[in-house]
Length: 283
Image 1: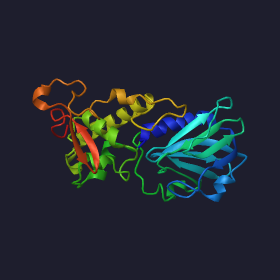
Image 2: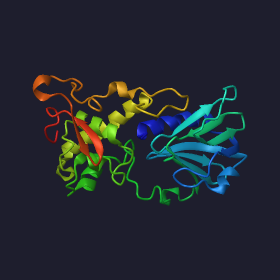
Image 3: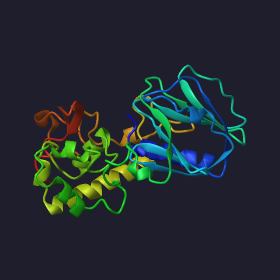
Image 4: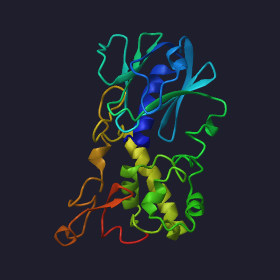
């Protein structure tokens, strides 16, 4: 599933293409994906795009008519941009096509159809059912060690699962949780409520750093994800522990013959990768 760096990369690609352009028409090739398409979506025309932003893993296209087009990539979704001179041949899994006033097309392709596209009122968007339960943005000023300690106080759940809880902090998906915990030298199984302020500070710093590096690399392409121009992301080449079971972790100085290298376990139905030597405790 595309995580925050992938969605942020998509938003930046869309921003360059859509802002200050008008939506000429919308073509829908099915009735919906995870949720049905609104009839109003098909009628959207001659509306200017004011801005493009992100909330958690949602792409928000803010329109001049007071509405926001809310997009989510689900498990396998892509948003691809075809310029006026680019050859566009519709694919079986192209479900939504935005045609802009300059001939550019934005195509939402999703083989598994877990994505969504809905229209919502821009005013009060934070109270929409998709957003009202969400925690703070990890790259924002509100995500601090003090905030994290307060939110995790008394929680016995594993710290990795806690930082993936969208009610605590949004967008820190499975890949980046594993990478940040490694960088902070924290055992992913440690109880979240046991984080000391100094350890929480280290974890906040590393979450921000990992996400920023991933965004700079265009995200991670493991299966379906590509950038809006069809190019792969490259952060997977920088993984320190994720998907490296049995291999040395980044900067490893231990005897891999004795430790067995990076370990993998299952937490919350997802694979966690960690170094048993560097991540032996709470930082």
